[in-house]
Length: 347
Image (tube, rainbow, N blue to C red):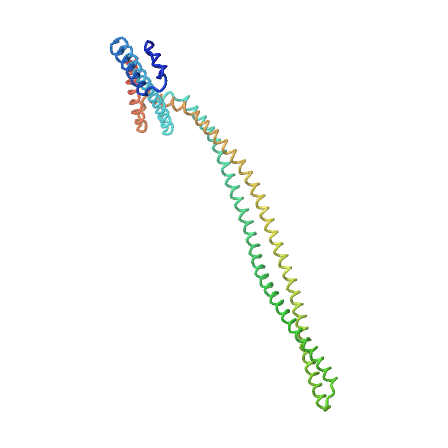
C-alpha cells in the first residue's frame, strides 16, 4: 500500500514507521478519487464521447444486421423446403406440369431403383421372419423333450424316495429282529446253564429232577425255534434290503442317464440357436445395407422435387392440393423482401 501511494504521489513522503500497516480504507479512498477524476475528464471531452457513442451505435448495427441476415437465411431455407414439399405433393398427386418431362423421367428412374431395393429388403425381412420362426420351433421342440424327460425324472425320484423309505424301514426291522434274536440267544444260554446246574445237583426225588429237566428242555426248544424264526426273518429282510438297494441303484442310474439326455438336448438347442442367430445376423446386415441404399437414393430425389416445385410455382398450376404451398411461398418471399430492405438500411 505504501509503495502504491508513493507511486501515485511521488513528492509525498511516507513517515519511516508507516511503510507497512496503513489502514485498508485509504486504498479504496484513493481509488475512488482516481475514478472520479477519470469521469470528470470524460464528461469534459466531447470528442471522446462522440467516438464512444459511434462505437456503440456501430456495434448495435452490426448485431442487428447479423440477426436480420440470420432471419433471411432461415426464410430462404423455408422457401426451398416448401418448394421441395410442393414438388413432392405434385408428384404424389400426379399433377401434370409442363416442361417437366426430363425431371419426371429422372424421378421415375430413381423410384425404379428404390422399388428393386425394396424387393431385396422384403426378401431379407421374409428370410429373417422364417429363420426366427424355425428357431422358435426348434426351441419349443427341444423344450418339450426336456420337459418330458423331467417328468420321467420326477416320477423316478418319487419311486426312489419310496424305495429309500422302505429300505430304512427294512433296516429298522432287521435291527429289531437282531435284538430279539440276541435276547433269545441269551435266554437259551441261561437256560442251558441252569439245566446243567440242575443236573449237577443231587436231588432227593428223581421225578422232580426229571420234570424240571423237561421244563428246561421245553423252554430251550421254544427259544431255539423263536431264534430260528428270527434268523429266517432277518435273512428274508436282508434279501429284501439287497433287492431294494439293487432297485435303488438302478433308478439312480436311470435318473443320471435322463439328466445326461437333458444336457445333450440343451447343448443341441444351444448349437442350433447359434447357427440360426448367425444366419439371422447375416440377413439383418443385408437388410440394413439395403435400407441404407434406399435412404441414400431417396435423398437423390430432393433436388428433382425442388425443381418440380419451382416449375409448379412459376406456372402456378391450378390444383387444390398445391394452393397451400403457393401461399406459404408467397408469404416467405414477402418476408425475404422486407428483410433485404432492412439489411440495406443497416449497411
